[in-house]
Amino acid sequence: MFLIANVFSFFKQKNRSFLLKKNQIISKKISLNMNAKSQKKIEKTLGGGGGLARYRKPQSIKEFEDAYFNFVKATHPNFPYPVRHTFRDDTSNELTKIILRWLTVNGYFGGRVNTTGIYNEKLKKYTYGGGRRGMADITAVIDGRHVSIEIKTGRDKMREAQIKVKNEIERAGGTYIVVRSFDDFLRQIAVLPKMENISKQ
Image (cartoon, rainbow, N blue to C red; front, side, top):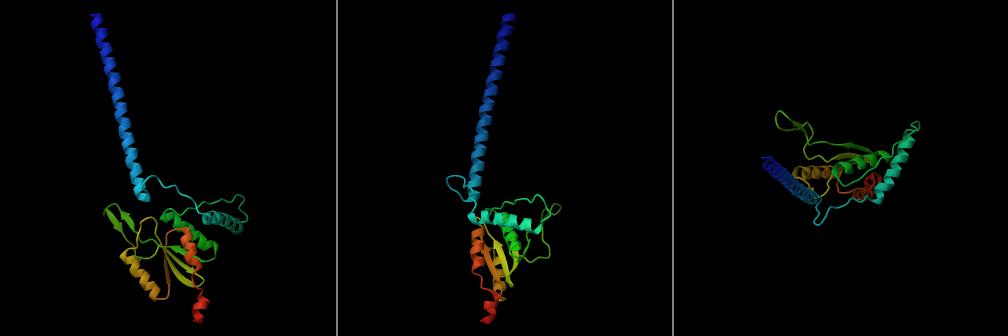
């Protein structure tokens, strides 16, 4: 009887060990499968095909980080420990942030326009304020000229409402630019005609 009990206990422990190992293998397979799916999803978002695209900070942003640090020190001379800010331009939010800082450093006006609305949990939908749909992400005044700056990254495209606003602004004598990177922004700003040159025409 004692022998039978020992044999039964041995097989019970063996079976438990086997099930534990089997569950570990299944968990590992699920984890690998989820990681593969997550990686594919990220690649699709970034527009990659054979691997994750690693962000490389442009030289222009590195130079602006130095310029912004000096600007902070100059505007806050009594602050003993100025913070060095870092910037990037691979997302709409980050690109918007660095453009607004650039406008401030260079003495121009820049304000962010939010027309996405606020999500209402009770209504289960977005509710919009009084702002007009299709307005650009940033409204700026550069050298006396109104400039609307729309931020687009990745595969993001202009919507119908945005195109309509763009046409109306340009007909009224303003400027509307679509920006996809910080370098792209600097290139387009550099070729803007000065207001004094326009008044002479």
